[in-house]
Image (cartoon, rainbow, N blue to C red; front, side, top):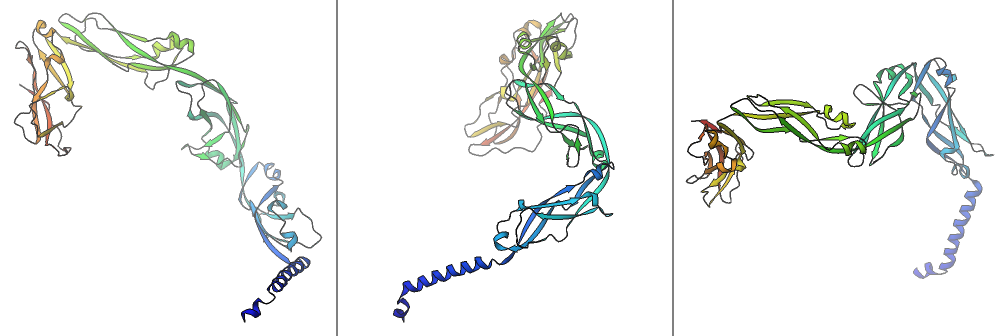
Length: 426
């Protein structure tokens, strides 16, 4: 049996190849009729002026594209592409239900019969009265300029724009803006931007079927350098008799300004005068920064426009010191215990009274704030803060701090109990 199959094998293979070639020839000669579908053929809308001349606008609800089935000879059908079809709908033939029939044509010609079927699809539109409004262009930015540069003056051409469209859509428009893209610029530049419609919630409104008096807005942008300027307080005058000036606290200590390079070079610092003449209590005031910056030709870039100033005035015979827990020394901590504060950043204020001569040499360092944890076991403790005071000076109230001691190797746990009072009157 095997010998019979293998006998004259090459002749049998040759016969198979010849048969396949003959089949191809027959197929090509007969060229059978086939069908093929083409989808999403765009529909060209004709005679729009019929709608616009009636002061109306239209919105396409369905029928922007159409699917077409083509039937014809295979040799012709297989060479077709979507671009070979042209679909249109004529608005001058709009029905009473606002539909217009779609017509499809084949751009290629053939001597053979070709059938097109698009299932009699129609273009459906909604009609609305046209309305128009005018808006000022609002520029928003995206991205960043080069470091130490900020936006200066922004000029739009035009700065007003007219929009026109369906009354319901135009009514929704609350503003017209444009997005300006920043990409590390360090000098003045110009750009063309596209207007964008926004509603009251700053959400973008689809601008299809809305016409603009200008499709592109020309924007001229000034880019100016910035500089950090230090602030100084010039304290003048003398407090009332029996009182003395201690120190001045103020925030911020510097401010960011912008301007031309020449103006920035001239503006070295800002000095704000404060008069403490005859003061018997702290002198506090808010200084308007623009008052000191504008004359230089520069512009304030920080959000805050004022400096908060406090000149501390104390009556003779009293000193006040302020410190945080990390300023306190810890004494006699057992080797098998770990130490931590419940609040590392807790601030304490102490008042010391005595003669002027004795108070004169006192500093926070010389006070030697410390706590002694000798004899304390693991757990939470309220410990008095001790000070190294000369006998002639008196601490007006005791000060306490909350600490946590844990066994070595044990992870401290945060306490949910609020800290106790940190001072106690004697």
